[in-house]
Image (cartoon, rainbow over all chains, first blue to last red; front, side, top):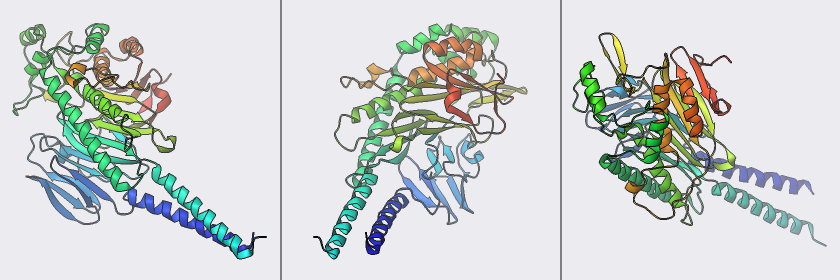
Length: 117
Length: 343
């Protein structure tokens, strides 16, 4: 093989590698950290980079501050979602069952597949 | 004799084909897609691994439809449970084999304690006479096996998908309010990693990790889930049928996690209505077993677990963790406050 062939081979290999990487990057929402807010009617993905306050259900206030997210207020009687506090790591979840709202930090590629409790 | 620039072109063609084949096989590897909904008073998360072939948008739509099927299966089971007056036969079997330490007919008792209060009225400790009276009434409360039975219903829905010829999931993880069902095989033969939450601390602290393959069901019963305090004493929601008060046979026990399954599932021959098939390979029994084991305590649970071919992890107030069966082989403690019982 000539030097040109070797270059070509390496070039194509790099191209295949790039394609593979691109695919994983798009599939796994890599890069910016995101949270998923789910209600029975809707599902929205929000970036944690942007500081904002949302109201996915009446009276349920979800806050994003400094790359973290929490349920800041909810009209529910048990307040479990509010007491869960700030969510920081992928897979962290706060759920308000009475108001049917779930907030979760999107899990990356290598995270666990679920949490038992 | 092949000329130099011809050889070059051949090389380009071959390598381009190789790259395309590589990309194609990567695309064929199933990717996980998650859907969150609400069922049985809990959050239901369904994660399906579906191959992206021929194109990712098709897989996305396929996953959406299948997740909707699973939710529908869980909801129809929920309706069937609400109407049932008798527990399914395996549940009755656990009741018998536990020597009465597990009893799904404590509906009247649970109502007296008002621990599941729907209208906001506070729970309270009933008088002794009230407890005796409530124990005599036999009212079915599917709470101790309902979520497990729902996971079974979902499993049947998944199993039925296998008969369709494309877009079927190759693996699935269901999480119904902390009850976990795993099914199938992840790409590259990777096992399922399931975290067990620390029963004592915040919502998102992990106590350890289960590494599982194939069909498994994980159910936890603990005194930390629902409780109230009266006169400085703490009362939890798992009652001992012998006394009618919160179970305390094994001092310091705060939670039991039962792991059952890992055999493979038989697909039901015909599509029976879900109500008629309240039973399940593992979910309902695993769910009931965790309650039974919490009441029985470690030592007394061992024969029961052996009979139902289930493993378990027992967690104590002081941080001691005891394993039943082979659980120690695939459960790794990751929290510094917890340690295995000294041999």
